[in-house]
Structures are given as C-alpha cells and as structure tokens.
Image (cartoon, rainbow, N blue to C red; front, top):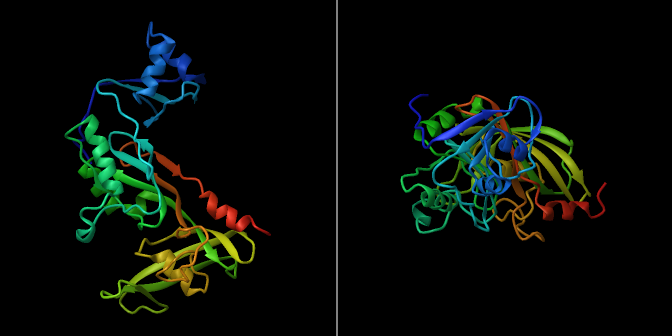
Length: 302
C-alpha cells in the first residue's frame, strides 16, 4: 500500500510521560489558553494515537502520539441510528442501530443507510470526501461497523480480511440454553434464490463452508446470552447455525419463531479487533450489549 493522500496539515507531538491531555497541550502549544484548547477539542481537531479525542482530562501515557488537525473543523455526527466511534484519515468505525441497512441494493436504492448518512456527514467537511464499504451488518443487527475513506484501504482490508481481523465477537440472545455451553458449529451454507433463505448442510454440498464458535455467558433457562465468534462471515450465518441447533436468535422471523418482547432481533456485533492497515498496530473497538438483551436474561438468571 502506498500513495495515500495527506488530506490536511497537522502537528504531531509525542508524550514522554503520563499527563492530562489539557496540560500537555497547554505546555506544548505555546501560549494557548484553556478556552482555546477546549474549543479545539470540541471541534474534534485533536487525535490521540489516531483516534479523535474530545475529553480535556484524557490521561496520556508515555509514547502516546497527539496530533492537532488544522483546517476545517470536523462536525459531530448527529443521527439517532448511527454513532461515530473512531475516525482517522483512512478508516471510520461506527455503532449502527438495528433497523438500518449498511448499504442499499437496487431494491432499496432510495433508502437511508449507514453508508448514505456517513457519506453525507463527511461531505459537509470535505465535498470531495469518499467512502467505501468494508463489510456489512444485516439490517436488524446492531453494532460495530467499519468503512474505509480510501479505495486502496478498502481493497487491502477486504482482500486480507482473515489475516487483518484478529477478533470479531457478536452477542446473540437466543431461546433456551444451548448444550454444551461452549461449542463450535461447522456446516455448508447455500441460499435459495427465490425465498432468499439460507440452508445448512452438515456435509460439503458445494455450498460455502461456515464455522461458528459460541459460548454461553448468561442464562435463565428460557433465554441465554452467547458470545459468538465467526471464523467465516457468511450471510445469516449466526442465525442459521443457532436455529440449526434448536436455539434460534430471539426475534428472528426468518429462521426462528419471530416473537420478541425486545421488539428486535437479538443479534449485536459487539467487538471488532484488527491490524490497522496503515499504522500496523492492533486496534479494538467495542459497542455495549443492548440493555434489552441483559434485561431479558437477568430475569431469574442463573
């Protein structure tokens, strides 16, 4: 990978000892007032280790890099279905709510999506900004989602996905309690073009091999919370595999009963850990488990 654009001017500093971000900037930026520093933070012009930091009392560690972005201030993303977690010159990580498509197909070309919301947000600061889809989450699945701001970065991430991604965890709220409490499911998945349902075969039938690892983290007998790790990322993989072992995802109309007191499907992408395509450092982004998931399982939990 090379020839990545330098999108704006910036100043990069390195912390040599533990310090509060406010004091560090006051010491290093020569004559700036506390008000000026707070304004710079609120405008999202300060990056710590290449993530935007807005808290003046953030604790820096020795070796941390602090970059002050000059030029157009970045505006906060304001949307009820999408929350910005991380942004640098190359990638953007968001927390997507349920009910929002990642990106539209021809059938949903006029629909608001995570992609359209984010691209519109980027173009407010830079009319020439580009955005590229790296991976997707189903409409009804919430959680951590990554986009690229540079075409070469998208290609590098997609072509080397299984080497780049070191951990990808979902939280699944399922009916009943799977036995054993920790296990792996391997099957071959094929999609029916008419019904758009994905079918699972225990033997190789020419479909896509799918491997899912799960572990029960909490249960009340009627419902369970699982940590689910994907070794492969096939369409509807978790939903199909959970239904296959007799413990469908809560609220799944396609593969389960569909009835849900939480008024959504019980699937959430809670953690994405990967090697940053430019810095080559391991980074991790998380989204909290939805409160409704915990509330349902906490009733008489054991």
